[in-house]
Structures are given as structure tokens and as C-alpha cells.
Amino acid sequence: MRHWRCSVSSGLREAGPHIGLTGEEGREPARQKGIIENSMGVMPTKIRNLRWYILTLLFLVTVINYVDRQTLSIAIPVIREQYGLTNTDYSRIVFAFIFAYTIMQGVSGKLIDHFGTRVGFILFITWWSAATMLHAAAQGIWSFCAFRFCLGLGEAGNWPGAVKAVAEWFPPQERAFAAAFFNSGSSLGAVFAPPLISWTILRFGWRAGFVMTGALGFLWLIAWLFFYDSPEKHRLITEDERALILQYHGTTPPPAGPSLRWAELFRYRQLWALLVTRVLIDPVWWFYVFWLPEYLKRQRAFSLAEIGRFAWIPFFTAGVGGFVGGGLSSYLVKRGWKLSLARKIVLLASGVSMIAGIPAALTPSSTRALLFISIATFAYGSFAAVFLALPADIFPKSVVASVYGIAGTAAGFGGMAFTLITGKVVDKFSYLPIFVAAGILPVVAVILLALLVGRIESLTLRPQEVAAGELR
Image 1 (spheres, rainbow, N blue to C red):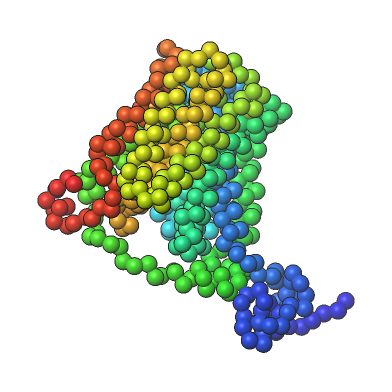
Image 2: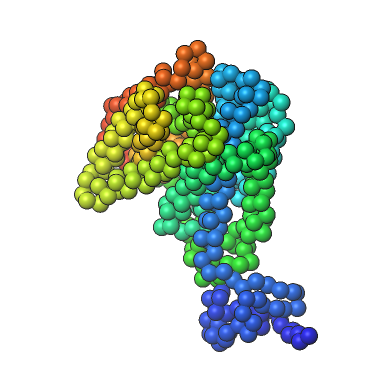
């Protein structure tokens, strides 16, 4: 067998066209396409636009996050029959997840900052994948609560980790698109979950459903271990791409405006507008995510196979709604509309459209019920896409993350309360009062948002106002 001995310089010479070298070394083509052989072994060719491969990993892990989250929702009709669980029992299981997820939102980001993106993701996805698989060993309500709590602790790390990876790998002008792309994995995960999980349960039983979805995380982890590193150290990145990314590292300007303590943000009515809105509207989304399969089973007599065939539709329309709402608001701004009016028009139309949840519970037709629910989730997706832009529209960059965290925590507590209420109301009455609430709460939310937030425009935080306790 023929061998070549290559020094470091000759190895670089062969890689020149791939890593952006100039001069004689860069012009010489690689003698062996696909690999560079040297005295240390075999090195793979550099990958152009490596950051987009990294983004694909972030998208896939977000898909897995929502598939794992949805597994119980699809399996619960079967589990309830086996263990005789009531709606109140199920609400407590869901509560355990939301509670853990809520309290971990403020901790997961700090853990990922401490351990780094690579190790942080390893820890979180190992934890939540193991927690998902442990559901297969559950024997009743309290073991389900315990495993669901563990799942919530782990899944809370997905978004902080993905956002940090985007910040590490993408220049500022590409970060908004990159964040939107990986976040779309949540909608796709909710679409994939019903047919995938129902098929698994019908073929192998509900315990196999949890084992299968948990295993997806460990498969992803193999790719992450092999493929992810920081751009400074990644062995597959080209020098051109490394330079493109690193030119923005360490160049972030100091925060605009005064430094505020977390609690001081509560002096501003704009924060209360965002907080109250999420407390009222997020529980509606949690209701559709966690209770829709159960509703279709109990009230619409859907079989598990039918749930698999149809329960994905409202989550697909939610994803479409996100693109439509966000795109429409941006289009209006480009057409010369004031930012405040462009945002409020879409928010108002979306919030009012969520009232479609009410006729969903009243119609005798299962087809029309699913149609109305899909309209409501489309409207929620449209609302959420625009609403998520408001903190950055209103608050300085130095406090935007804190505003997101405060509103997200408030939304979690709203979701917990609504979940417990749902279980008790459905056990004592029916789903109708819950669907009525799910239709009315968003309307109340957009009215309060309009009254409290005022004009949607950049807010200047002035130290003298903070000291005086003025509520702007």
C-alpha cells in the first residue's frame, strides 16, 4: 500500500482551497479529495458553512424536545384506562411538568453559561431523555408526577442552550433567522408527535412509546458529541468562516441605558403589560398542547389511531400562523406603517380570532370542532410571533433577557393554575367551560395589553425615574 508522509505545512497546503489560505499554498489543490492524510492519521476535509449544519442540530433537538413533551399527551387515554386516573389526576401530572419547567427557566441559562454550550447540552438532553424513558416504569399518579417533574427540569435547558449556540456561531445579521429556524422545531415536533407516538403505542404498547422517544435524544447526543464545538476550536470549520464569526466575538458594545436591578423593572407599566398578557394567554396554548388528545378521546370518541391521524393538524396551523403573523407585521412596517400600529393590528386580530375555541366545544361535528380548534391555534401562533418581538421593541438590550425571563416565569404560574382548574372542571362539569375560557382569555389579554403598554416604542430607562419610583 502506498503511503505519503506529510508535515503540518504540507497538510495545510493540501487543505488550502477549503480553509481559505492564500498564496501558493492556497492555490494548490488537494491531492486526495475528501481526506487529508498526515503522520497523525486521517483528518476530514473542512466543511464550508458549517454553522448551518450546527443550526440543523439545534432544530432537530427542538423537534425532539416537543416530541418527548407530547408523548404523555398522546398516551394518556390508554394510561388512564389502565390506572383509572381522573382528569384531576392528569392535571396534577401536567402541573408537575410545568412547575419544574417554570422554576428551571431561571437556572438553566446560568448552568449552560457555567458549563459551556457543548457540555450544557450534554447534561440537559441526557437528563430529559432518561426522564422520558423512565416514564415507562411508572405505576401510578405519583410516579408519573415524579418523572414528569424530572422531564420539566431537563427540557427547560433547550432554549437557553440553543440561543447560546446561535450567539456563538452566527454573526449578528443572521441570528434572528437562525433563532426563528431552530424555534420552528417546536411546531414540527408537535406535528410529528401524534402519528409517531400513536403508531408506536398501537404496535408495541404505551411504555414502548416513552422508550422510543427517549432514545431519540440519545441518538441526537451521538451527533452532538461528534459534531459540536466552539468555532474557535472546531476542527471542521474553514478559516474564512471562523474569521467571519469571530470578528463579532468580544465586540459587543456596552449596554445602553442605566444598569437596573431585576426588581426595578417592575416599576414600568410596559413590563406589567407583557407579564399580564402572558399569564392570560399562555395557559390557552398549554391547554391545547396537553389536553387536546384527551379531549378528542373522551368527548369526540376518537380512537388512538384517529388521534394519530388528526391531532397534529392544530399544531401545524399554529406553525403556519407564526409565519403569517410575524410576516404580516413586518410587511406592514416595510409599507410605512408605524411600528406600534403594525404590531397592535396583528395582535388584536389574532387575540380576537382565538375565540374560535368556543364554537369548537359547541358543535356536534368532530370535523368542525377540529377546524375551529385549528383556527384558534393558528391565531395563537400569529399572536405569539408578534408578541415575542415586543420586549426588544420596547426595552433596551441590557434588560431584554430579564424581561423575557420575568414574563416566562409568570406564564408558567398561569399555566399551572389553569391546568389544575381544567382537571377539576372537566371532572365535575365538562370541557365546555374550559373552551369558553380559552376563547375569552385572549380577548381580555389583548385589551389589557393595549391599555397598559401604550405606544409600542423604544423605552429609555432614566435613573432618576427609577429612584423616584415613577411608573411610565
